[in-house]
Figure 1 (cartoon, rainbow, N blue to C red):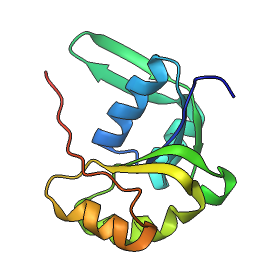
Figure 2 (figure 1 turned 45 degrees about the vertical axis):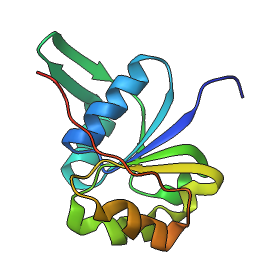
Figure 3 (figure 1 turned 90 degrees about the vertical axis):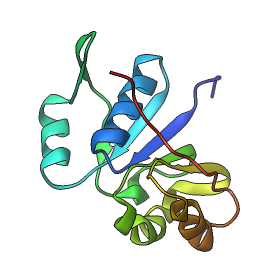
Length: 131
């Protein structure tokens, strides 16, 4: 493996989709974990990123089964705050001894909830975008 990182985006809504797309655009290996309509749309036509500077479609690996992915370098957690504990349990197949987990939720509880399940590899995180 070269310098590229394997990054899983767990929860491909607004925040997860945006940051995953941006990382894919700079050449990182991105694996989106999605479900329902997002999963079906991404498998069919990719992830469409709309920003003030234009529109881009990202084609990347997408699955609803973290066990298919294996260990990654980083997991960005883009689920809603009330889903964090369940997400932490579901993302266990992605997390190895050197994996860093970064929650993107507003508030300070997410990192603590994730660390309670996955251990100390969880960083505190918060995100925003500029329009």
